[in-house]
Amino acid sequence: MPSSKKKLPEDEEAKQEIVQEALELDKEMLEEEVKLDKEVLEEEVKLDKEVLEGEIKEVKKESIFEKEAWQPRTLLGKSVKNGEIITIDDLLNSGKKIIG
Image (cartoon, rainbow, N blue to C red; front, top):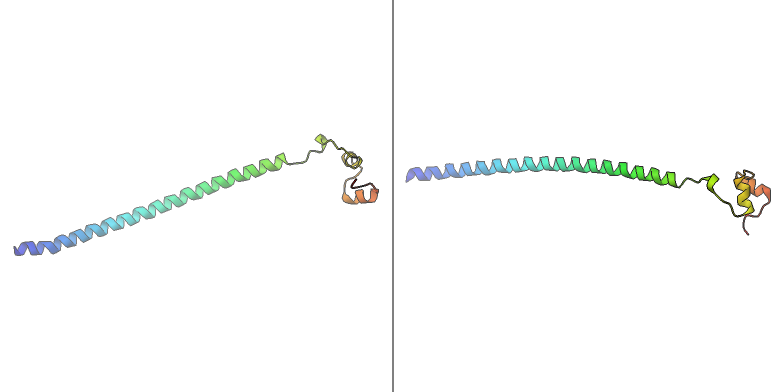
């Protein structure tokens, strides 16, 4: 019986060592998982940014004013299209009506 009493503390110590090793392994695994998750998120953010930049460029391309395709409906618009009026100063100096 005395030998079993001596074994108990050794067994408890061994259990504690095993638990401590398991905790260390869990900690290492969690740190690695967090690192991988961070890398994945950074890559997703990079890809999202590239997609958004591409969409912005596409919208800008679509919203460029095409003077040739424009069909003016007013005398002022016709003067702008044929190049008689290029700046706001040209308009103000021309004496043409802006509204109405």
